[in-house]
Image (cartoon, rainbow, N blue to C red):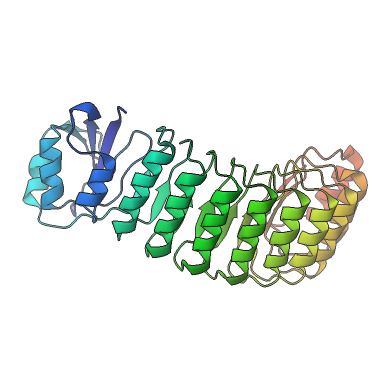
Length: 352
């Protein structure tokens, strides 16, 4: 795998310098996993073709030297100069790896397992993005095992991979004991109903997860019902994405009932489902009593004029909602006018 890597270097000076690095990994003695193992304290790693360092250690400087990296500095005035390595050599500080993004790098399950081993050893990584990497259930299980012992990671993105119900089950098991993860993005996988049921059970006991993205996972009404049940007792989740999941009125009813009791969820994505007027009415009932939901996305459903008028009516008394998306819902122009009048001059965005 050949990567162009960029080092972002923040020395405690007036200038915020960015080093541009070109390197073919076939000529490098150290892989990314090696970097994590050898320097568990690095300060921010990678994005598809990007390596970011904020501070560096003596060991990391040696790795950079042996990698034969060609460096050019660009400061805040876009002035280029040579010599970042020399400046790094003058420092005597530890580096801290805080973010690693490996997007579309064809990791697969084998590399994901190796990466999970490194994650178990690392004590500083906070954000990990592994989108578009053909990671399946085996890789997800390995990462989930690492989450059981990792105490620093708070954002995990496994979107657009091949994670199914078994992988979701492993992640759910990890969520039962992990007390650090705050954001979990699984959009574009195939966790299905069974995976959603497992994640829902975890939400009953997990007290740290704040964002859960399950867009395009085939969870259906049954999966929505299970997670809605968890929302009745969960006190930490504030953003939930259920877009493109074949959720209909039954799922909307369950979510609406949960919102009547939930006091923490602030953002709810239900776009591109099959929710009709009846499901919209259930959500409207929740908006009569819910005082925390600030964003609701119902784009590309089928609520029609009847559902839209019900929402317009509740907007007159609900002052919490600040962002509402009702585009592509078969709403006539005269009803859109009523919606705009009900929305009034509140701060936020109405899309119809």
